[in-house]
Amino acid sequence: MKPVKTKAQIRDEIDSQIAAYLTQGGEVLAVPRGTSGREPTSHPPLPISFDRDQQHRTLVTEVISAIEERRQHKGQHKPLRRAPKPRKKLIYDDFGQPLRWQWVEE
Image (tube, rainbow, N blue to C red; front, side, top):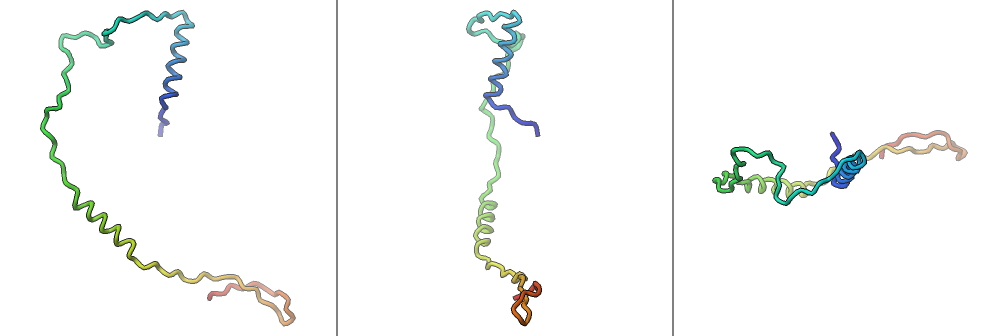
């Protein structure tokens, strides 16, 4: 996945581009207020209208209630008993000296 640049990184990149432009002899002129970067066309852009009919939405109350019911049932299950794990037991000889290790299930 391509990493997303943060605002600070974008700002630093723009500042470095401006500095490079100015060091190469570029000049920044004052732009009068209200001037647009959009090319003049015969038809102005269409305004966005919020007067459209609302879309019909599906109610999800049944889905939410089913999820909540499943969530409540999860807590009511008895915990499973795990089988006892085998452990190592040290076997001694007749004189009390360690002889070997043996796996014992209890």
